Length: 462
Image 1 (cartoon, rainbow, N blue to C red):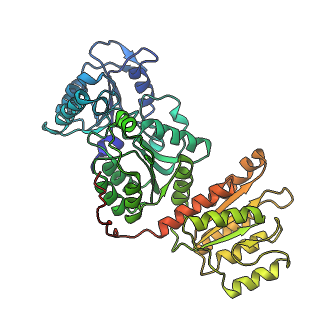
Image 2: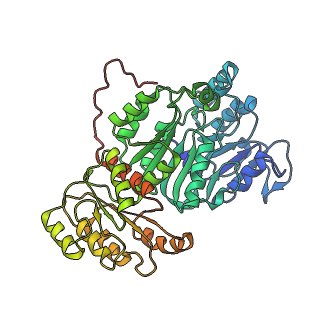
Image 3: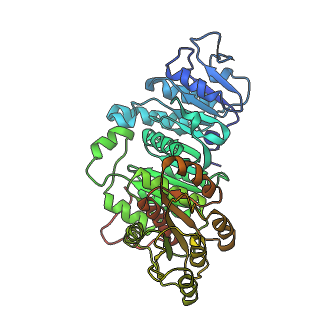
């Protein structure tokens, strides 16, 4: 498979390795040795060892399996290093240095030389970067980066693929702080040969990955990105930036040519890729897509123990294109038998406050055949707690997404919510976050397998 050597190596060479703390080559080795495989520090000017590994003069002198090179040398010498990697049979490389296409005409020429070195030799080398901070695969303790403190990012089933390395790490640390595990986190940088298409295709086939989230600044072939997203079986959610004119800044960052924002948004919609407007929504939506079964449709049943949050949720869901259908008469009869007359038994269902039979109301809505997705909102009350046992039965019985939003003291929620998460019920701390997560499920349910015709005069190739 393409880019297998990058994301699933048998051994790693760190080119430009250093035994001086604080240098990029030192931090890269320190991260790399967490990997359960051979790691070779390469530096012809160094002697002795670093972290118990003997320095090697060149990649060609390595006596052992190695598929991936972490390249920690200045930009002008990177093409020659990549040529050496190709000659040594190393099929993948991560290039940290900047100064390539994002740096003007001279940098563009240097990146052309880099791509030629990677593709014109006897053995091709897949390049992540240049101008990237690398990637992580936490489940394999594979930290192909010079960034520090990343070993605390938890393993999980959400792949983060970001054009910006900085934003990739921001998402990874947000995920850690919110208890969201990641299967991988990738900063694409300048995308010399490994870009969105290659990364999406790889993680679409990755058994650890159940959803992919994208950060997109701009590409030189938007249609190819859209086609790749459409072909993927794994749910994909995208955060497309550039609504305002930030083209010069973006191009100076990763060499990105930002396209017209509205055309990207239209393209994602036509190809069935849900989009969001913030990193928080990206993680919230990504987590629910990675956790829940795929809904059969966009019909949402809302059950709330407080009317105000329920109204805010219903408003936000409808704005996102969700349908809140009427419940079956049989379902409504069951609910009305449970609830006192002062509550609201339509959809949304409002119980007025948490109550011992709250879980029974949720169960009635979840078992309604007209409902594809269930969103529950309940403020925490010590005397009532959450309907955890009922939800445990429902998750396996109805095979529908069940999403839980709540509020309460932080210490209590940190203790209580993991029980719901363990059942496969993603939890959110605000009504809006819960609604936004469900909106991602709604948009995924509306996903079409064939793109609509692009409107006359519109072009999504950039």
